[in-house]
Image (cartoon, rainbow, N blue to C red; front, top):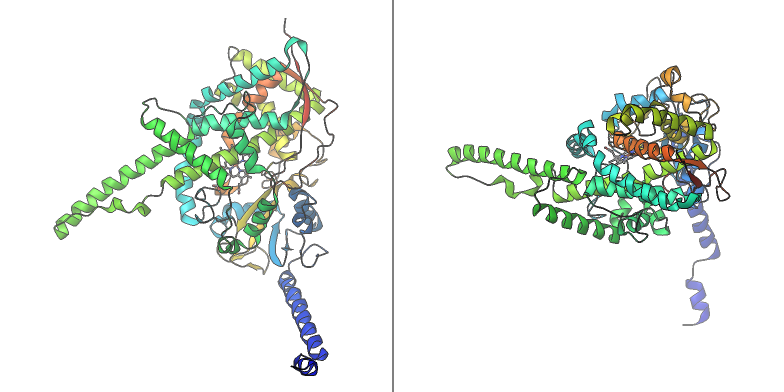
Length: 539
Ligand code: HEM
């Protein structure tokens, strides 16, 4: 073929330019129409939008921690009860007003009962847990698991908790032997302690994280929360395009982590089958719920079978179909797993924030010590479950820590049934995702004057009564509030009581003031938190 023939068969420059400009125009109109979603509905948005990242560009590039990205959106929507924003081109709602938060999370829960992180079993074999379950299935599992955290069950766990505190006590004893002051990265030390607590209380296992630097549980714990590019991409996909996750067969949980938990669970259950000693941990309670359900289904089956026999002349065995059982092995394993991951990092982060504040405020620490000592005296030197409940100032110190630095700084709900926003003409469409920035609310001077100051008295007496409902929500709100709130508070009070009773806490050269935050972490989690412990010598 001659070169002139080839040239004549190529599209002309005009055609190419026309195609390019049409395509560009199409993209511009497409993005514009996407970014006008809230405007068309009369909903305010933050001023500037970064095309094509929307309002959360810093989140994509992991330049700013998530907590502060959402606080900025909250602040830019000042004066509005709610507002819209975009991640890429997808619209989201930010709810700012405490009364509206109550309305959505509590009163109108039936329109907002799910989060937007539904996982399929394709994404993980440990996906059937409370955090990701939706609709009626979530409701049934939650109903069955709520008694796991009753006062009676927590009281029964105090022995397990005390064993973990003794391990920590031994460690600190050695670290401060011969009158030495001990500098500790409490971010790591508290993570080891809470791993041991959750290992004992969830699985009945001695994880040995404090004693053994190479403890498997602690290694797996680090792996779960280790920020990586893969985890970042998965988290973006889960929020913006959950269907893409299953299409690309992206796993939500590291396969090594999954494998570890299945092995631990299978071994533990097997060990229990051959051991008559009854345990008092979450796994035992899950196993009992499952056994009860199977028994109940069998007895229903017998009744149905008997009736069927009378009607049809032959019996059938309905229990053959595992789908009739809610607490399958997968549901048991998934929930034991979620108790582990939701349980250790949140409490460890809160404890390290609290120790940091106590190091900065020795007068608060001294007052706390005074309270602990006087309650101890009333209880013959023991800080058992009932004694811990009497620590009112301790409760205020922890509440203030959770106000200033809530580890889970963002709440999410998905609109499951169209909802008309009270006093407006806006109808929130089914499928819309709503966010509440816990951190921004807790730092709004309207609700908490001088929000950067650590003041436990905000949570005492009259001040506590004056807190605006819906403005203080470190554990969430409504029927999906943290299921283990009382367990977490009991754990944190118990260990802090031990520490302040035996040590004074100080800042040291390595203490970063203010703390620095990890822009890659999904939690409001500081990088290392260094403090110094000095043993109190009593005559
Ligand atoms: C300081 C400690 C903790 C904090 C601040 C915390 C905070 C939260 C928050 C904010 C939520 C979401 C609530 C909502 O959407 O309304 C949540 C849910 C949850 N938390 Fe916690 N949590 C803590 C400790 C724990 C512990 C120790 C466990 C387990 C042993 C746990 C297990 C869960 C579970 C399973 C859910 C999902 C509940 C559901 O959807 O039904 N959390 N937590």
